[in-house]
Image 1 (cartoon, rainbow, N blue to C red):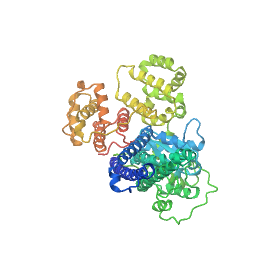
Image 2: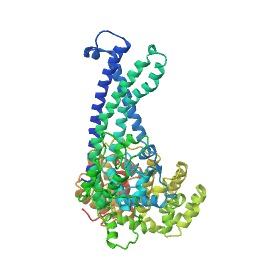
Image 3: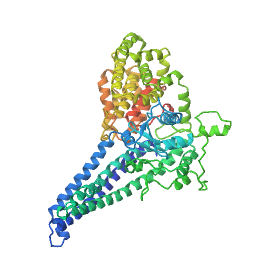
Image 4: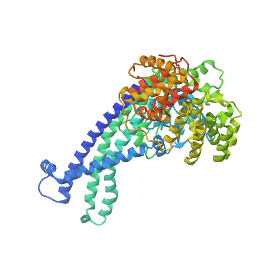
Length: 628
């Protein structure tokens, strides 16, 4: 199954979830109205006429109660949806997570950040923000509505107790949830179940507060009656939760097996994730947050006890990965000292094992992987200039590094004056970095951005506002916007605006066939091909050849004097809301267009990554352009 198929399946599962939710709500309304109508006849009217089905169906109380139940469930679901719409960080913070800051990270926390960075670079997405939960158990989760707002949460126990290859297996498992569409599905599941359980919470409130206070004044006050009403609603609500948990468990258990298998595929080292699961058998995986049960289906392993387990048995998961396992749990009281990746070891075979455990991530066509993706990512990070690496982990340094990517020597004085005016302390950092050859760094813009964005997200909103205005100054200095500049600023702004909750995720993907974005694709493909061939005549011929290759012969070349920056911006907004099947064809068209002259420049490479981000397609820093 490739990436686009996984996204389609996840959306289909979401619709199935909606249907199950509607059935659950229908059953909840039926039972609730039956109970409230019986309660009204028995304890309010004291009517001697027996309570029958006919009376139930004809009673105004029945219809009024049904409407109230629907409103309550709708409000509960809507409230949770609005809460979760803030992105994955809302889930992590609700569970008590603390955002990992590279500046203050311990050696073990830094190792975790390295693993996530390598996975992100290899798989082609921005490094998700990492949140630490102080539980001593071993567990993790991925949360978010899109790749943009995804976060990785992990317990202190996992960071301290897992070897690097085991930690890598856990992180690969969570990345597979991101790519398989499980993360978004889990968010929808959490919201829908909240509406159902709200009825039970209302019943519990009536019993504990209204019933108790009324009961103190005697039976005439109705206190005992309120207790009966509260108890009935409490039972009904949690019976609804019972069936909701069945839905949650059924969805979650199936996808956990898939995530385990995908993690093994990524790492090519089954012993890593199998070792992590064995350690969970020894150390447990309980999450102690008061909100842990709400997100029980998010976790790497069972985080809360429940009669309906959201995860398959650990023993079964281990046996599917390690068929030779004898069922014995090793003793881990004295774990061996952990090593950093790439550290020399006397055993050459053991070192090769680490290398074989690299995540496959240089995507040829999205969904395909190579075996040495993480090793390449590790080597790429190690190859970054040491001074630049240090700057990328500091608030001022990371801003200077990004401005360096926009820098144009011809406008040196004006750019220096702008930096001095808006952020004097940043000027020295910027000048120090420019002592290096900035053009060399621009060729590695994708790698630098991936490393920089995590630190950049530690800025305050006010600090980012100033930095953003500086970026815009650097772009506007020559009164034109190049493809490179648009790509660079788009990747940064999309990530930052999503992180700060300022970017609205499109509510609905609306374009289901390529003809719906015909004009937009003509414009973008024409622009890309014209930039490579220089003149309209050569570009038009190349355009026709590319369109024939991708089966889009109806698209016609647009001459360069007919294309403006405003038209380009509008086209990209429309392409953002194509459905996965169309996104696949659009992305293939982009790849063919940029390689129509048989070479790919760093600027074109950056543009492809910007489009991949726009379409929510995970694309590694390096990938082959020779595949057809």
